[in-house]
Amino acid sequence: MKIKLTFILLFSLFSSIISAEALIDLSTKQLINMQKNKNALVIDIRTEKEWQSTGTIPGSHKLQFFSSEGKYNAEKWLAELNQLKSSEDQSIILVCRSGGRSGMVGKLLIKQQKMKNIHHLSSGITSWIKAGNKVTK
Image (tube, rainbow, N blue to C red; front, side, top):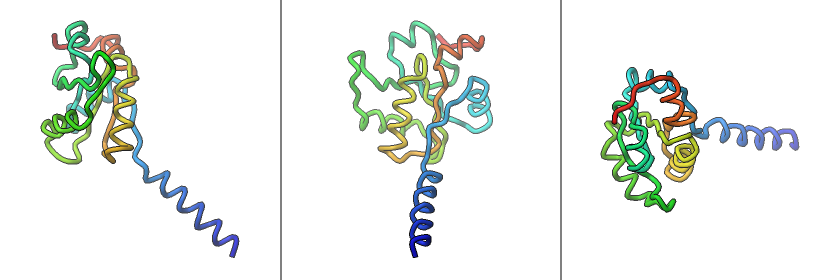
């Protein structure tokens, strides 16, 4: 009986881990591929000042998440994001300067909003520019 109970507990633990959605880090090449071949929605969550400073990834949408004071209104932001989505299961790729903020927002979307297909550009727009990719000013 102990073995059976242990097996059931372990199975339920592993099945919840396996089924849990995780934030996926993307390289610049993977982002380009997903944008072209999978109709992924690229969302730049940086501030207006940052967009002006570096430009944005061509085809991305500017949707600032954090204010310059570090505050956010998740409900308003999600409403704006949902207007941009072409389907409920469309892949979303988040971009920030270096990957920190997009990682936080991605985890928030997955854990609190139970969203799926959430990715973020590893090392952010910095990696995009460093790889020699074009930006839109």
